[in-house]
Image (cartoon, rainbow, N blue to C red; front, side):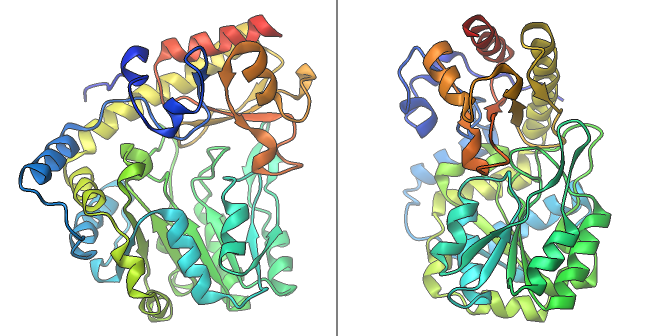
Length: 383
């Protein structure tokens, strides 16, 4: 396995993505969920070949991506996916909204579990639903888990769906198989639908275990829909391709109810890149995971040395880390302080949940050890 190193700052600042155009050059940008590694060579070659043959038309459907993903899912998680039960669309958030449109009525409640990816607060309203929050239990010291009793009560009170984040952004939690089975039983009892966002599934750290929701039980297959993508693990979010996966006749009907444009929105470049990633990107991904494992441990060491008041738990997955700055007295949104005083941009904690994110911020470690070190040293110097 060859370790994959991040590109130097000078090269990164030539990128035109949101991460590298949202802040002045004196800011270290660490809020946006993009990685700083060079693109996997199989993806580069596949995209270049498409350009050379002028293959820039409409995407031809979901089958090629689905057939590439199925063996990847077996290899990584021993999860058996039927390619015939996959519909692609442009991105995971779009896929979640389209599933919700099929399973809720206007005004129905949809459960989310803060602290959680900020767009989750917007997806149910886009589908004409409303949000019900059932925060995660636990915290940085003991770890987090789903509040299964709270979820059960919210469904009993009338919620019709839940958007599950697995692995959970921003805390890096991989929900246990036991909790997922219990969640599936709750869903079956209330005849509701769990929409599982598994976009970070391939970014698994050593010693951790990721369990796909649809793999845990017949109840999960009957009441669950997974939405996932190669976009986070292979850093191709801008190419626009995600997969909506079902595993029962009940949930097949959800995909069958999509408007034709749901699948047509998939980018042909996203499909080409995803096929290359799933088929040939494994060695590159393993090299990235080695770097990320080193980075998450480096962050722990830097915090202990320079900012011991900041609380942090090593994530099980993802390149995103959740930091508790509360002891430093920097207010509800410490990312504002780090940007103004240290010129380090972090993701604003309260956007992940007003109460649960208070005093917190999210830091992206999908970069070089040098950038992480400079970021923590800048923040420490500004305190």
